[in-house]
Amino acid sequence: IGLTMLAESRLDFVVCVRNEGFEASLAVRKLYRVLPDDEAASRSLLRVVDETGEDYLYPSGLFATVAVPAEAAEALAAG
Image (cartoon, rainbow, N blue to C red; front, side):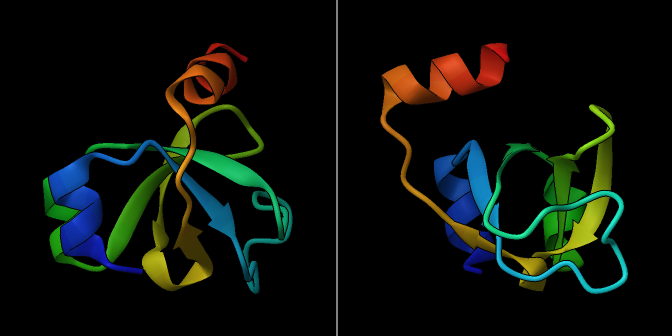
């Protein structure tokens, strides 16, 4: 994942592409909300709102960035 791009553009969502070690918290092929965290990004981590509804740090390699239209992003963030 391009962490620099993520930090600069403030993309709000990623898709989980791997969940080894985090099976209870992350589902493969599911979209997750990303919260801005420059310190985490500098350590190749993403602050993700996971299946628990809480935000936690995860290795960025578990995710791929996705472009989500603004209207869809608003609907996803509200849910």
